[in-house]
Image (cartoon, rainbow over all chains, first blue to last red; front, side):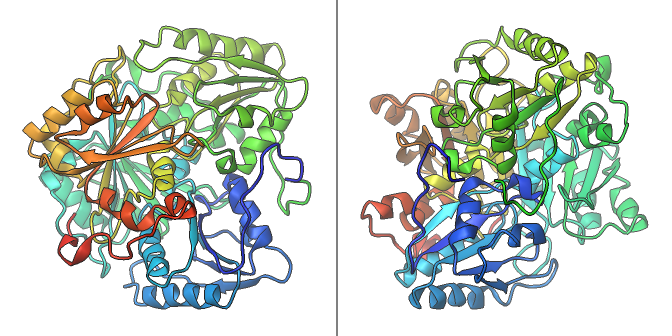
Amino acid sequence: MDKLPFAMPDFAPGWVWLVGAGPGDPGLLSLLALHALRAADVVVYDALVDKRILELARRGAVLEYAGKRGGKPSASQPDISRRLVQHAKAGLRVLRLKGGDPFVFGRGGEEALALVAEGVPFRIVPGITAGIGGLGYAGIPVTHRDTNHAVTFVTGHGIAGEVPDGLDWPALARGAPVLVFYMAIKHLETISRRLIAAGRPADDPVAIVSRAATDDQRVLETTLGACAAEAARHAIEPPAVVAIGAVVRLRAGLDWIGALAGRVLDADPLGAHGRRDTG
Amino acid sequence: MDKLPFAMPDFAPGWVWLVGAGPGDPGLLSLLALHALRAADVVVYDALVDKRILELARRGAVLEYAGKRGGKPSASQPDISRRLVQHAKAGLRVLRLKGGDPFVFGRGGEEALALVAEGVPFRIVPGITAGIGGLGYAGIPVTHRDTNHAVTFVTGHGIAGEVPDGLDWPALARGAPVLVFYMAIKHLETISRRLIAAGRPADDPVAIVSRAATDDQRVLETTLGACAAEAARHAIEPPAVVAIGAVVRLRAGLDWIGALAGRVLDADPLGAHGRRDTG
């Protein structure tokens, strides 16, 4: 880091940096995130942040767990925001470290607005979101020229842990050929049923990637009609991202982690008939 | 980098690493990308990669420009893939460096499949995509609890530079409350007209963020009905991302770069009546 040809911004006392830690692999951490870890006085971190990332914090930094468990209502959100404000007002350099990106289903906006309300200065450091980078580690591109010009990211959890209401399922089903659900394991049965009712084919390819971009990554390839039962049968647990659509078939050609372990990749995973140039 | 408590994978001769460089700010580069830059023999890079990032390449590395200009058909894509194969077969460590993420409208899948066809081993290193990180630098979260449980990313360019056909505009318009368009400047008039015809309100908030996450970042706040004329009037040029939906209004509270320059942020940017808990 010492020899970088550009300056990193100063992490001043009394500031909060809201930082995305990426999907798992500590190698996907940004230079700014590493800089923040090496400067912070206190690190308030989420459940999804890898232990090896926390080990990058400077010696003497206080590590505070602010985890929220998947499926439970996040009763502690105001507490977390309050804690950030308190630390900042005590003159500490406060690193709020979140899995993925703070602005993708990460409630980073809420936390930042709580800081604004209290006059606490802050900086946003984006991270790689699991729905893109985690799927990339499974060999699944969220877009591909032959399959889709659009992709929709959806959370499978509403505020109280329920399937979000207000989603326009028929439009969601047809609006983009590829759908990526976050936090969808608990409600996979409801989600897949609604999508099929809204017109998605039951044989639409599905990949469930759990603990994406970690050494424990598991990928379950299935179909929309079978995914809920298959996830249960294989005891898939959160955290997981669920990809739905033709891009899932590209994994046969792009599973580079599998190839590291000897998998022979298929250079034509969509096949001659699999190609469509659709929206 | 020397003191990292985890090992970086070896960048072996004859391999191609397909790496996302992020939206602009070199601080958003990943540790893996930096590692690759310091090891690569040849770096084949796109137009959107910041010069300061290329300066991280090890001394002696060959830097090859593979830029494609926005709006033109990508006639050179097979050439780029061929070049990657040639370099790898010559025993070089080949870094293919792309702006943003290689799998988000980046044609990384195509390039990787060309490598598979020739038996060239490869690794994917995701990056932060402009539609998330670039908007984050404009103080716009792509999701926010009070505004949306879904966001759709769309490219404004088809294969030949036209507005992509096959998009289901009515479903796109209603499928997610927030839409993020890449490469949309050229066709902004068509895109906005179709979305309004499909039911999006003409006063839907729009932000056009050009040169996101660079020192030259510009943000134009407008509406769906006015955005094409406004973009022309302000001579907005690619590269730019376009955000459509209520999250744009959060910028009044979350424009942290503006705040660095003295902007007073609004802790309640949606206002009491602006809040909706919709899909």
